[in-house]
Image (cartoon, rainbow, N blue to C red; front, side, top):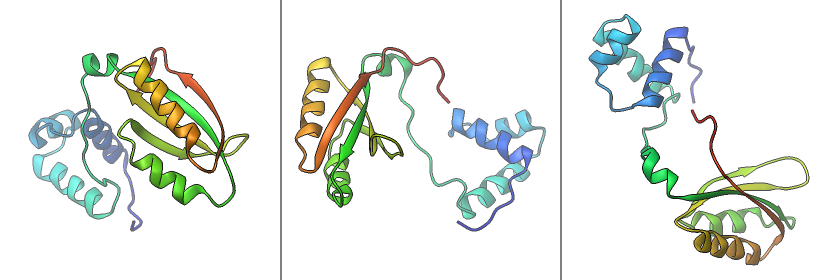
Length: 146
């Protein structure tokens, strides 16, 4: 990523796009108090500078409420990270994989359709060669999400 200077208006623009990346440029411009062409130029600059990498899908709250989500803390054997990462990336239930410091090496964020499906995913992760230990925490509710 090239070094791009981020202004306060850029931060406001990024926040608005984070809420709704499909919002019309003219609507965003009104909210920011800028012209449509200025907003489009800012978006183009942020995309070309690598600040905006892409646009994604946000699922509805109703759909998300039906999923069972968990954080799975994982300790792995030395030199197994690339293979374990590859196996985890093949699981459709894996939403994110974080390398972390501390007693565990990874945090796997998963979302499953049911408790039994979550149980299957946790068992699968525990059986991956090189996984030494797991500790799972089921997410009961989300208090803040940005």
